[in-house]
Length: 148
Ligand SMILES: Cc1cc2nc3c(=O)[nH]c(=O)nc-3n(C[C@H](O)[C@H](O)[C@H](O)COP(=O)(O)O)c2cc1C
Picture 1 (tube, helix red, strand yellow):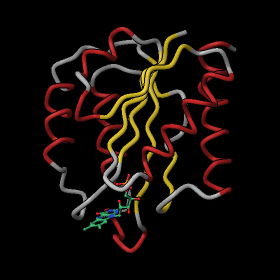
Picture 2: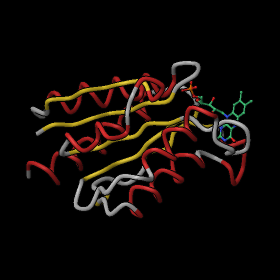
Picture 3: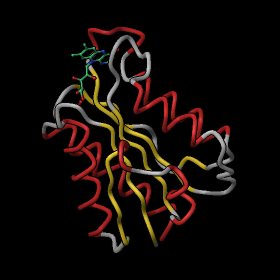
Picture 4: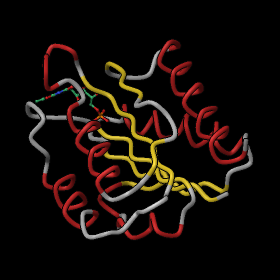
């Protein structure tokens, strides 16, 4: 099974999440490609069985340019039947905007016809042990859905 993990990260927290997930999925036997959102064409998702987006949220949830560009291009795709999952890092001080961009992309995947195979994982700042356990559990859900 092929998995594509696209991450958006300014200070490394979401990149760390993506790396943890990549290792988990490789352990389950997935052929994983992980890439920075700024250097990824959303159509790469079409080549994958499992599509994952890992993203920060900055500025009260208003998308940065790199997120918005990817979002707009992705909106043109038909992802009917593709399996997907989203996760990301934020900060609860931002209240209702906590990890908002994670949920923006969750909505978009659904709108494009994709099927969610793991609950969104939202964590604060860099992944600690508890956060790693959440990522591991999500990876297991993804594996169960695709290889189970
Ligand atoms: C200026 C600024 C604005 C932020 N706005 C939000 C926000 O609206 N919602 C949120 O959940 N986190 C917000 N954060 C927290 C970041 O999303 C969080 O630090 C995250 O771990 C950064 O991920 P990265 O290291 O992958 O870039 C903000 C942080 C900064 C510095």
